[in-house]
Image (tube, rainbow, N blue to C red; front, side, top):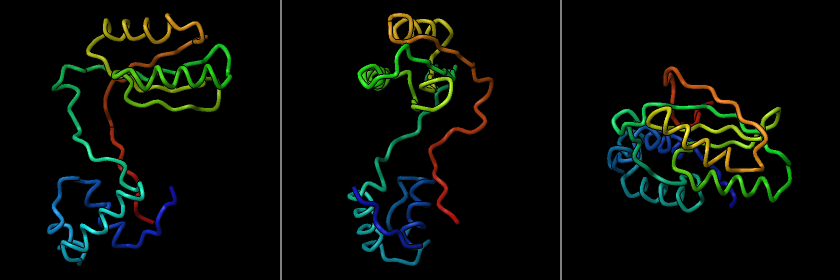
Length: 157
């Protein structure tokens, strides 16, 4: 997928949508100086070209009883494609994993995990790490506070 050339109007539209994906085309158009139809055409192109991957609701973990967040560094036993791909599939299938990064350094993966409590995290570690012979070691940090959480991308210069 080739990234389209984005002009300042595209960037302004993306900024509006990144703030609130439910903003209607008329409102965006008034902010950026385009008609609603022009905004809709641009949004359609941004979706088709993959600039906008998806539009989702951001849920409150606390309101859903998911009050604990963990940052987990995972070191694999062997770093070969089959092992890495199997772990990626395992991570993708587990709803507790909010984010996963394949990284350089001492760890192979960094996971952001959300669970209702320590018992829930212990169950997660059993199924994800202790039951997996390809996991050599993992280190966990418990988040004390959600200082900044989001996926907003920097759009400005």
